[in-house]
Length: 366
Image (cartoon, rainbow, N blue to C red; front, side, top):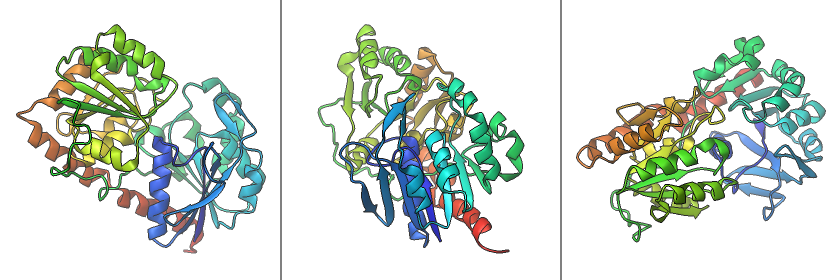
């Protein structure tokens, strides 16, 4: 069975969807599937490579429109792929166009990761294209029940399947013996991992940090909102307690998570679909705070057990949630609860098995 996944970017580019595709394709390869990824070529990345059993082909982008890279050779690459099945990851309109021009001869699976929030007007104009692709999909995957009732999926609910995102529990695991990778940063330590984007709630995080005078904030990731975030930290008088590390290696990220005291995802809009970063943190035994934005973020944490779910855009609530996680007396119990929840509900192997079954339904005769 050969399956090609189509999305905008792929590691080494960091992001929740990119990390999901990377993990899913690697685990599919372990199950005997031959996975391929088609994506846009970022500066400094090879046009072709193989990563742990996954063939990757990167297509050059001609230009970028509304923050969307447009790779003109993507339809050609998809047409000439030897895959038996195409798996598109939404939202990314160039992938939809590529399927229409180069992939229609094969069964189709679509994963709808989130709604196009910031580009809602563009999504409205592209709705006929999106509906045409969704109508052709044999299966439509959503990562949480919240997406099942999305307006865009109303005509296709008989083919919608809910498959929650998972994390690699063997890789992301507790290790109390690990050496501290950040010995010069005091404790307690709160970690944020993700792209620095408009919907991540970074100004709210700065205001919450000001309410926790003993806490240190470690930020892993880069993005367009870095300048505004630093300005907010200075405004709230806590820039000296925030350490913006930028992008780090996978090994360094694992060490940072294992030695964190709390993780945080203070997102403010439905552009945040789930929150893989806090799932990875809990797998490492770190309690986490997330926000209720009407998507799957609240499903990533068991409120009052493995972390806290708070209202968005509320610095006081965010600070209280973090204080709950940082309670030194309750810390051992809450760290154990975080790992237990990850084992129960956030397994990447369960996720991969469910996706593999969808492929079998479309490719293997009954």
